[in-house]
Each structure stands twice: as C-alpha cells, then as structure tokens.
Length: 335
Image 1 (cartoon, one colour):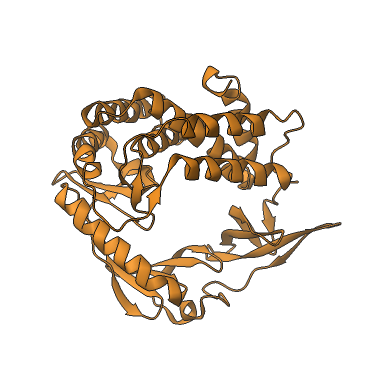
Image 2 (cartoon, helix red, strand yellow; image 1 turned 180 degrees about the vertical axis):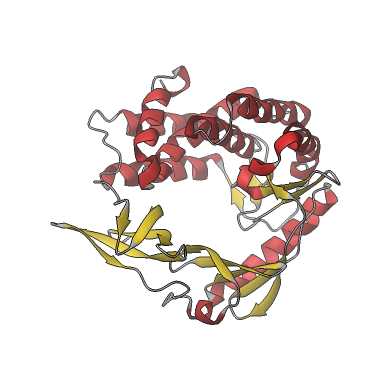
C-alpha cells in the first residue's frame, strides 16, 4: 500500500495511522492552504474526507481562530501563526494538562538557560504563546556551529533537573513505542517486511532497552532540530513544544537528535558537515551529562527504525525511508 501523493486536490505531506483502519492526512491545496482530514483504502484506491482549511469536526473552535494555519493533525491539534503569537487548538479536555506541562517546562528550561515562552489559555481548547526570538536551526547559516555549541552547553543542566509530578517514560515504554510504529507500518502494508527482519530488529532493540534500568533525567521526548530557535545576535537558544515533557533515560533525547541529524543529511536538507556538527554536539552533551555511549547507541537504533516507519507514511519520502531501513538493518547494533 502507498499513501497517495495527492487526493481530492490536496498534496499529501504527512499521514498517521488510526485505530479504525483509516489514515489521518495533512497537506496543502492548490492555493497553499493547509488541509487536514482522513483517507481510507478501498478496492479502487482511496476515499477522502478532507474538509476546507481551518475546519475540523473535533476541533470546532478552529474555524473562528484568527491567524494563518501552519499545521493541523485532524482531530487532535492545529497550530496558527497569529501576529506575534502562535495559537495551538486542541480538544478542550486536553488544554489544561498541556497548559500545566508547558508552563512547568518553560520554568525548567528557563532555569537551564534556554529562552522559552509560557502559554496562556485564551479560549476553551486554545493556547497562545508569544513568538520567540531567532530562526529555525535550518536557517542558522554561519551561526550553525555557535547554535549547536550553545545547545551542548545548556542541555546537561536542563536534564539534570528532576522535578516531581512528571510522567515517567521507562525503557519498556520506549520499546512499546518502537514495536507499535514498526508493527503498524508493516500491518498496514507501508513497510514490506516479508522476511520479518524489521519486526525482529524492533524486538531485539526493545529487549536491549529493557535489559538495563538507567537513571532517569528530565526529557523533552521529541527533541530534534525543529524544536529549537537560535538568535545569532544575542546567542539565545529557544526550546519549543514541551507537550511530552517527562522523566526518561537521557539517552533517548540524545539518540533522537543524533539520528534526525543523519536523516536530514540523507534527505539532502543538511550537508554531511552540518550533520557532523550536530553529532559532535550530542557526544559533547552526553559526555558532560555522563550518559552511557552504549545507551545512546541503542536509542539511535530505536530512533532509526521508528523514523523509517514514520516516513513510510509520507509519500515524498517513502522510497528513501525504505532504503534507510534497509541500510540500518545491516548495522551490527540491529543484529
């Protein structure tokens, strides 16, 4: 099975599996507007239910939210750029929890030297956050090295904080996440795993993850380049999207960031030299934080497999994700 490149006038950029055999999709129409909805496989291809931009039956407040829609996962959340703010629209029952964890995370990140913004509840299910200074790291240009040096300097202090009250994400949870992504992608036909190699590798990495009980640290749990901004004029580094803040083994964020850097180089988004700067920053931060290189390697293997599954749902990247998976399956850490 392949998610179509386009359907119902929408060029599909991202897709996610759901529990009911449909796929949630996000893309842009001919006008450039973000569109989100669902598609379902049929005997003749796919049927689509993709409402107009800024419409979502499960997020009714989105229709009246001001600003430009920049991201939308149907039924879950949408993000809008509204002047000097970003607005996040979620289901009303989720808003209070997200407000608390992001406000708490902003305090912790600020204490470690990161620049952050505390969200505000501006309407039921709508969180507003001030736009932070700086540019996305992919636009850091001549400040690339300085930006990653700054991250490596700040990260050990951030993760050393061990506050009470956060969700604990243990190695067994990470193993379950990995097996779910691989198993679902194989089950939906997005990954051809006739030999069973991908599922077997996911099981082996999961077993190795749970074989030890590393100390916990503060964790972003979705750390990659897209979660940070850098201001070349001030040297400020901002950290974004603390929805998944938790306590977890510190190798998880480090492995996730490192493998995303390699993936960006494979995609052609970054040069190999740029990726190497990030990999060195990860090694530096890991050394300062006393994180086991073995655990970072395991986390990298888990991330690599998970990314292969995630990108198998994205039409533009599906073929590359397949080659990426085949390459990683030859590595000793997955043997």
